[in-house]
Image 1 (spheres, protein in one colour):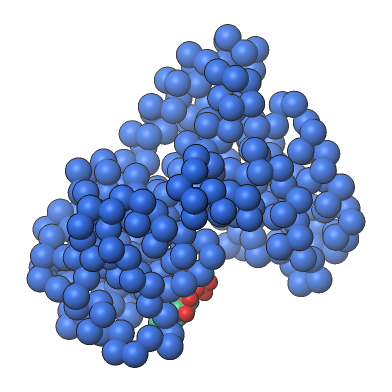
Image 2 (cartoon, rainbow, N blue to C red; image 1 turned 90 degrees about the vertical axis):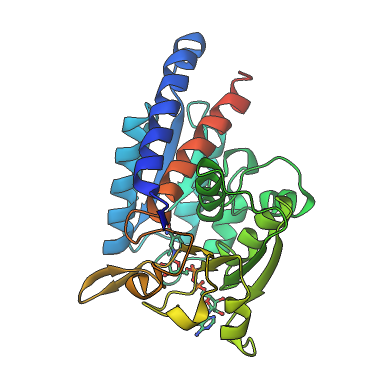
Length: 282
Ligand code: NAD
């Protein structure tokens, strides 16, 4: 069994980006800049933002935090996004979700300049993904594709079953797999005989948010299993797969933690450096 080590791969990517940034920054008089907006005190979001800021620092990217109180109005948040859109030192804008109740996240996401949308959530970038045009890709599924590539796993011709149809993971994952000539199948809570679908997968991507959901009887011998799930349980962070039950049956699998999570953050850095290069015409 091959352990797809996202933690180590992400570290390699951060090192590569650091070298790239060190070469580019002097030529353009500044390093890439990522504005990070965090509204309210959601503990999980605070952890994510801290991890993203730390990763930026390691790659030589300047992250500028904008921490706003939970009672921030829609108008104030929109004003901040508009200001960041026109700020020449800002290459990427990250709006940490979820927003506190009463704030319209879709409206805010659509306000972000697509050229600075390093999370790849703007409809323009989602449309570009659908059309196969260059643009910013959602970080989690793009991180998964990057991880597969680094382990020389070619999705071409493989049946890829994805559990979960969210806009940030399931749907874009299917399109990215399709772009690599896989045959994607998106499954969800209304799918008939989900187990049979999963058992047929050469690549199984679990992104539903149910700890230990994928059991041994749902996995084909020799499959590649990508566990996107991050579930906080009494026993700590758990993935959507029962890792111990499936690990001896699969060809390769991502651990949780240390799999897709770090790759998601690495992809954010990749996207930010890409945004910088486009912005300064590097
Ligand atoms: P979501 O809640 O938006 O979507 C979950 C999807 O799973 C839905 O489409 C739903 O139809 C499907 N689903 C739910 N129960 C199901 C069931 N019993 N059978 C089949 N399908 C079912 O979730 P999301 O934002 O896509 O996140 C999914 C998981 O991935 C969560 O655990 C989340 O924490 C994690 N996540 C991890 C990262 C990362 O960086 N590793 C990034 C994003 C999300």
